[in-house]
Length: 597
Ligand code: UGB
Image 1 (cartoon, protein in one colour):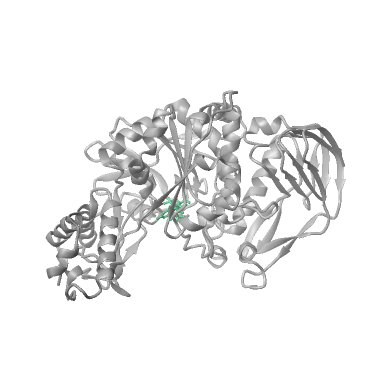
Image 2 (cartoon, rainbow, N blue to C red):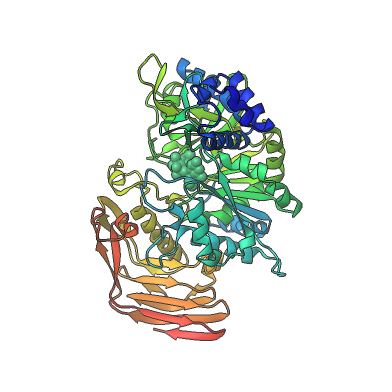
């Protein structure tokens, strides 16, 4: 047992051990050999305990107490929504390109100089089963732009567009990592010169895992492979709030005059098309919390934004996670549960976990809570007595649960965007995506990439281009719309107005075509594309592009996800481009140029 081993400890460690012993954790030290045996391992064990203690708001004692309470609730089958009635909330609905949308985009771009961005990227993406980190995946394979690169270039484009002319604005960018992703995220940034961002603009905050629990008494689980280690698992994206709080960075931002914090997830190639307008909604409506949402298909694996009204009168607008929505509805007067209404969609908007928080009220709230977010536990019981677990469990938390502790006076709203321009995550592997119920989105690498071409095609169409209609094709067992492969850099087309200002005359693009716009001041006038064309230009080069481009272009070749001769990043999408013929123009010097196809 612990015995004389106690003397190995620093006063701080002794303090912590006493707390653990008082909280039913004596099993941790059971059958320990006397000092002199395994001392290094024992020291490492205490270091781990100190880390677990310091990285949880309120320390391990709070963790154990919270776990006991939540495990008791789970055993008793307590309904977390007891007393609450769900109803469909109302929020702002945006239609891409209309007057209202353009007005919000303008407001959002102005506000962006007072914004900071936070990417939660600590998850491994178990559902996708990709070997690398998800932010390193190409969002699309026409240009090979990675998610992280696209995010950074989007933030830089916003930064430039919102600068007050003195060019001093530097939008801060935080990435939450975990032990699973930290090293590879840092290495991706460093080996790519931070994709053009100043390294000082970027802060990596690593989340720690939390202790696993063996039983309903919240006894911490020892690692089955090492008696001197506690077994740990991820605590969820909700950690981002306590990390931002404890890092002190929020106060730095506040003192620098910032007003908005925008949270987003690791693989959504469309998101930044929705950011300017959504930020405009936040500032115009003075929302303390603004969640982005899209129309949701029943049973889709995204949470539902719901108004919950308590019998005591309290009411809040909050995400109800996808696994909880159906039982909640069935228990409260919706006998069919989570089903589509006559519109073909669930009446509850789908949460895409893009949150915009106003910094001042956010800091105020975190000062009260220490950044702690309401948690939940999801033990898999051995049998209906609910006394033993199949495997150890742990507490979890989600960033979108932040509003749960807010006072009723808080202004909590949400903004519904059309899915085609706001949401196309890459979460499911090919096999699971192919099994998604017909009509529901695949959320795969295939659909994520095709959604980018689709959105860009629709946007150019709205800007006056004649764009060929899409063709349905099947890749990796998924039927997707294939549009012309149009891509552009965020600095070329940050907002709909900026895109419209760069497209004029009679322009068209055929279905087999690829158009990649890689510069900022590229003006397209009377251009007809039937083939592949890539225009690359430095920022000081102004290029007018027109005429008729005709070549064999890039064809799409289906590949099977099981074909191990292909690289994993291609296999997971089920196709690759065969670059038969293209026009590629490079403008590497400042000046005015003209390209005529
Ligand atoms: N993440 C972390 O940074 N740390 C962690 O410990 C875990 C995750 P998933 P899921 O918008 O599409 C969320 O696994 O289960 C990061 C919402 O809860 O992709 O699909 C991770 O790296 C749900 O309401 O989340 O569900 C990634 O960037 C719905 O909105 C992010 O957190 C859905 O996303 C999300 O992780 C959605």
